[in-house]
Length: 514
Figure 1 (cartoon, one colour):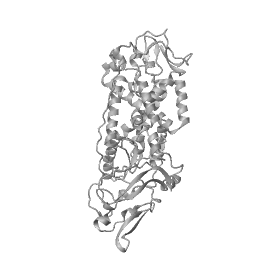
Figure 2 (cartoon, rainbow, N blue to C red; figure 1 turned 90 degrees about the vertical axis):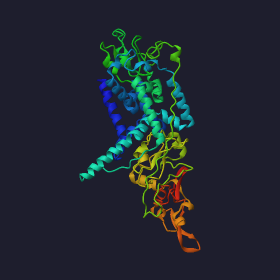
Figure 3 (cartoon, rainbow, N blue to C red; figure 1 turned 180 degrees about the vertical axis):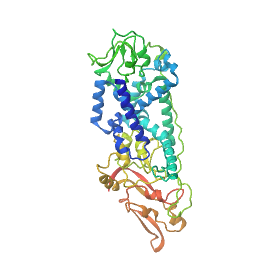
Figure 4 (cartoon, rainbow, N blue to C red; figure 1 turned 30 degrees about the vertical axis):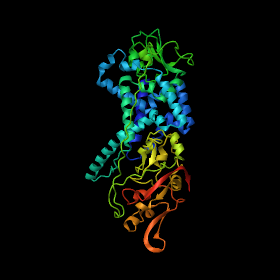
C-alpha cells in the first residue's frame, strides 16, 4: 500500500511539472507553478523558509520522501529504469541485481566531492556549476530544449487540422530553438543521467546530485525508516537486488538510510515480512555504523578509484530571426542579426544582474512560459543558461508578467499581487536603455522618413526631430529620452534596418522604477 501511494503521488507531481514546462497555451502556469516552488534548491535560493523547513522536518521524520515523490528528475530515472527492465527482463538475474555491475562498483565518496564543489560554486556565485548539478534545473532544460520544440510542432499540426475543419481550438506557435549551446548541455545531461539510470537505478541521485546528498545526511537521523528484522530474514538477497538505490546489504541486515529514497520496492519484494517501514529505536544514531552498505564491499584499489567523465559542450551558432516586413518594408529584406550587447538585458523583476547570476538555476521555466519568445538562455560565459532578453522575435510587452510569476528561485521576483498592479509596475520598470546608431538608420542611409521606433514606443521615450536643425524639412531622426525609456525593445524589434537595427537596447546593472 505504501508503494502504491508513493507511485501515485510521484506520477502526479511528475506530470504536473512536465506539463508546466511543455504547456503551449500558457494557461496552466497559474495553476501548476506552485509545484516548481516546492523544489528544494529553488526554495533555498528564494529564501522560502517554510518550504525548506517542511522538507527538512519530513526528511528527519520519514527519510528521503522528497527524492522519490517531488523531484521530477528522480521520477524520470525511475521511469527509464523501469522501461529498461521491461525491455530486458533477464537483467534482473544478474549477480549484482537488476542494476548491474556499475552500480555495485560505484564509489561512495564521489557524492561528497560533488557536494563540496557545488557548495563552493554556490558561495562564489559560479552559476554554471550550480546549474549543471541542480536536479530540478537539469530536468527543466531537458524538457524545454529537447521536448518542447516537438510539442510545439505537434500543436501546429493540430492547428492546421483545426483550421481545415473550421475550428479554432488550436493556434499556431512559433517553432524555434531556444539555444544550441544549452541544447547540447541538455542532451549531454540526459545521456549521462539516462545511462546511469539504465545501469544503476538511482545511481545519479546517490552519487552526483547534491540535493540528494544533503537530504541523505538528514535521513541518517530519520525516525521512520526501512529496516530488516534479523529473525525473519533468510538472507535471500531479493530485496538487495530489487533496491534501486543500492541501499540494502541483506547479509548484514543493514539499510543505508542516506541512500534509501523510500520507494518501498523492497517491501513488496520480501516474501517473509522481514522488511518493515516504521519507527526504529535509537533513531538518532545510525542503524549499524560498523556495517558497510552493499555497494561499498571490499576496498581494493579498483574501487577506490573513480571515473570522471568530462563532457565537452560545443557551442552551436544562434539561429537567426525570421525576416519580417515592417511598415511597408522601407529597408532591404534580409535576415536581421542579433546585436551583441555589452550588458545583457535581465527579465523584468530580476532586480539586478548580480541577483540573477546568484539565484538563477537555469531551469528555463521562464523561457518556456514567455508567450512572446523574448526570453532565451544566454550563451555568454558569465551568464551561461540564464535568461536574457533578445528582440529578434518580439519585444517585451508591458502587459506581460509571465516570467516573474513562475520563477521558483527568487531570481525573478513577482511584480505585484494583482494583474493591475503588475501591469502598472511593469510599465514603469526600467530594465535597459535604447541606443541609437546613426550609421544604420534608414532616414540617413536611404533619405526617407521612417519613425517606426517612435510610433511603437509604449513609453513615449522616442521623438523624431529634423536631422538638420537648420532645415525643418530634412528627414527626421530619433532622439531617445533615457529617463523615460524602459528597455522593452519595441524600437529594436520593429526597426526596419537590416542586417542590424538602427536602435538597440543595452542592459543595465540594476533595474529601477521611473
